[in-house]
Length: 317
Image (cartoon, rainbow, N blue to C red; front, side):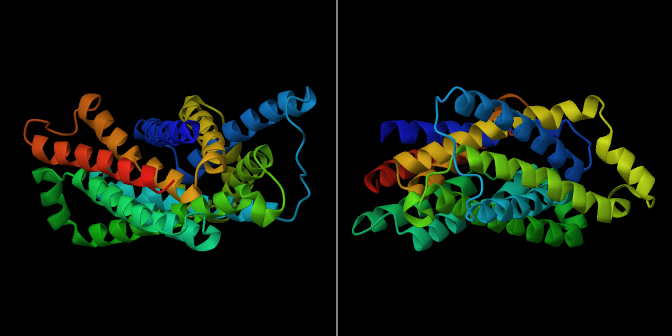
């Protein structure tokens, strides 16, 4: 149980850190996601080649029909990631997080409804924990005066950005539920860890290529098939950032699956929403995006509520 909690906290950190490379990248969002998928896929192939080849782990059935859900998860995650980055472009990272955080309660409630992995009085602790964690996330959303002025000056972009952020949050919540369902051996009749990584990463690459191939002219103004072909296979310095992010995402996904096995999926996913807290720390101490002295009360309240949410979720295990 303790190890499951530790894995969930580590994943929350990785969910915050793996977004950092995007801050330094101007690469098209679909191509960025594709290169994340490439690193994710290569890392997975190396991992399963060692584990399955040396019989450290038993090979998993790659032909099980439940893998269709993982492929679907890859497509929905791509949609969420595209909306994620477009929303940031329109309303900024700080304001975006406030709306994207709908992924927490959406994912937790979907997992609870589908798996029913928390029962009895523990459901009360779970709901309280989810609620407090969500409110804690909102406490960390601090909009500067400049951002408020920009928001008022560009209300159309703000509405579109909020809609995109909400959409991405719903997408990520759904993918969390699908991940949990395929991980749960009671439902699918088998245990899948590395097969999930393989199909998820492969689907990200395939769907990214298809989307860019069809809509590439809308992203970069390129209308020729030849140019889109070059864009997809072009390797330069810009590809290293999504590759780094993809490596971190592989680690986060692997630990997520193990966490789902050790503690109730609903609890694990809710704890992973601590990523908002780590994101704020990154913005505070590395990028100096938030004035700590000016907002210390709100930040402190957010930290205390996050700690309280973890205590409530502990009782739900």
